[in-house]
Every structure is written in structure tokens, then in C-alpha cells.
Length: 449
Ligand code: EPZ
Image (cartoon, rainbow, N blue to C red; front, top):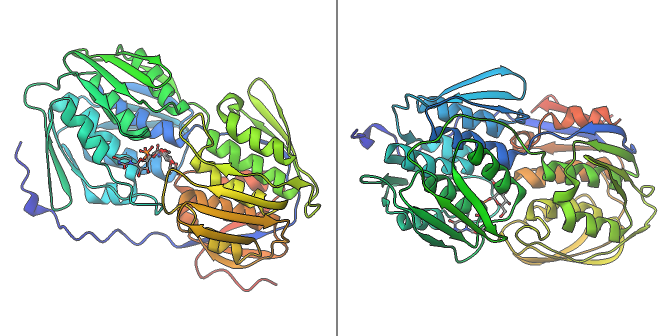
């Protein structure tokens, strides 16, 4: 199939996103129970994995979030049948994919659309992918993904913002060595290798729980894939895979976000369906700071110190690939650090722009110093106060909500759509715990009474 790329406008103007704000009245200790949803960073890859077979795949516990909606829309644009028979349930059938082109629109909305490169290339032998966009937390290149595909025999050219990928014949298994751990690079390589001819070894392979959830689904589909060492995944390619059913692993990042919410509001919250075992490094930090955490079989009970008590102890935080401290939990934890007595040092080792949002936190009264793009210090305890702030990325957005819940007064947070990309019904879950939060269309926010 020859795609006449002149048909596509290079300069792409994303549709105007719905401008929404969160309005939060702080100071209420959160109390009660909240159910943790399926993991965004598992669900998006599982939906992509379903294109490895023409048979139907059924997924449950899929979070109802904007990124899932974008992935479903992208799959349907490819000709993939996606049914949504019930909330949190999706069925995918990729029998008649007729259009192997992932447009700039999908990629501009969501970097994770790039996870389609491996499966579509392996199954159909060719695909055109737009260079992805994604969160504003760093350059976010995809060179390691492309290198991995070439290691499996693919030919990939890059022109005018698009990757043109072909696998003459069939992909061939091989040795994939990454210079650093890459989660989606590992996943793209693994997905492609399941249909490649021969044996593939991926090293260092990412160890995130969402990667193991994807391995579990692939094994149900008949793929020969196994984690043969903590940082090694090996695959023996098969000619074809079958349909399967899978429930998405719970979201450890959402879990950590609610742990911090309980801690900074001085509340008592039970997180149902929370994956305690996947949060080792994070729970070690928050308990060292003085948050009371009790892990049940699949729940976490959190008890926070009274707001403003200054009972929390300062703690240094350095992010690292799993099982290290998750970079996605660094922004929420930074809010707790503002409530700790003493100086905490932040070292963000994964992304170069993930500290930018701290300027918004400082506008709410946090005492902090961003030393460079990877280092900051936070002094506490600080009495946070209401402000009008702007969200730049998904995790910073959720963290500004946490700061607003802990602050005196009513905070207006612009850019609510960023948060809806990755948290299912976040304002509804907070309201269920007694928080005073509402999501409003821009312009309806009147000055706080
Ligand atoms: C995944 O991003 C997650 N996203 C991120 O969560 C998470 O923060 C990150 O892994 C943790 O490493 C999804 O799973 C959809 P990487 P990913 O490849 O795979 C560099 C969220 O909020 N790199 O592990 O894109 C990269 O710049 C998001 O849910 C290259 O240089 O991240 C980074 O410095 C944010 N070239 C490092 O590697 C590449 O080709 C690790 O990134 C790929 C990555």
C-alpha cells in the first residue's frame, strides 16, 4: 500500500482542547475509602498488544481516562474494531486493519501512541508513525525504539515528522541492548519480537510492574516471552498469536497520589485494590517521613498527621527506574515535602524538565529552590495558601490538586484536561473522600466568595 503523504498537512493544529479548571477549597481532612483504577501505563500497551492478533481480545479494569479514549480512537482510525460493552471493559479485534498510519493528531495528543510501532510492524510489515508529542517533561525522543526495530531487521526512514517503517519479509529475532532503561522502548521491542522469526534478548529490560502485566497478557495470547533475569526479557517469536482476556493491573501512581492526599490533609483513607507490593521505594520514603501506612492484601490504609503540625520529617528523594523511586511519584511527594520539618533534596534522574512545575507550587507558599533541571531543595513546613495556578503536565497537575487540598483558601487550577488524561474521575474520587473540589469550564469560575 503506497501512502501519498502529500495528502496530510504537515503543520498540524490540534483541536482546541476543552479549557477546564479545577476549583479546590483546601483544609478538609480526607476520610473514607476510594477504589484504585487500572493502570494507565499498562492499559495503553495492552490495547496496542491486541493488534498482534486478528482474534478478539477482552480487557477489564481499563481506566476510563482521556488517554485510553485517544488510543481507542487511534485504533479505530486504523480499522481496528474496538467495542466498549460496559464501563472499564474494552474488546479489540484487529482482523481487518486497512490503514497503517498513525497520524500526527494521535501522536500530538499522546506519546504512548508510539507503542503501536512494534506490533503493527511485526503483524503487517509496514507502518507510518508520526513523531510523538506527550507530556511537557523533557525532550522525550524515540531513538531507542527505532534502534530496537532496526535490530530486529526493520528499515526505518524519518522524513518531515514521520517515521516510515518496513519489515521486508518478516522481522528477525536478535540481541537488543539499550544504553539506559526505557519502559516503552522495552515494551515496543517485546511486542515486535513476539512475531519475529527466531530468538530475541532485551537487556536492560525495564522492570516496571506494567511491563510484567504486558508479559502476562502476551503469554495468554500464546507468545513465548519470559523475564529470564531481573533486567532481561527473552522472546521466541511465533507465526501468530491468539485472542485472550486480561484484567489491567491496578495503578500504582494513582495509589501513591492518594497516599499523599491523605497525608497532606491529615486524613484517614483506605485505598481499595491498591498494589502495595509495587510501591516499595515510595512507601519507604513516606513512612520514613512519618506517614502511617498499613498494607492489607490488596488495600492500603493511610493516616496523616494533622495539617500544619510539622510532624513530618524531611527526606531526600532520588528517582530511578523500577524498583527505584518512581519519577511519576516525585511531583506528588514534593507536595508532602513542603509539609516536612527541615530541608529535603530532590534529584530527578529520569527527565530533564520534571521540576519546572515547582514554580507553581512556590506560588502557593512552598519554600523551594530549583538548583538545575535535575536538582531542587524543599524547606518546610510551609503553610500553603490558595492561588491561581496553571498545569503543564499530567503528574504536576495531580500534584497541584494535592497542594490545593492542603492549602488555606480556594485555589483555581487551569489546565484540568491534563489531569483527565491519566486519572479516572479524579474530582469525583476526592469528593467521595470529603474534598471540596469541582471541575468547571473556563470562564465560569467566579472570584472566590
Ligand atoms: C514511561 O515513559 C511512562 N509512560 C512514563 O509515565 C514514566 O515516567 C516513564 O516510563 C518512566 O521511565 C508510559 O508508560 C506511557 P522511558 P517512557 O523510555 O517509556 C529517555 C506518565 O505520567 N529515552 O522509560 O516514554 C527518556 O527521555 C508518564 O504516566 C530516550 O532517550 O519513558 C528518559 O530520559 C510520564 N530515547 C529515559 O530514556 C528513547 O527512545 C527513560 O524514559 C526513549 C527514552
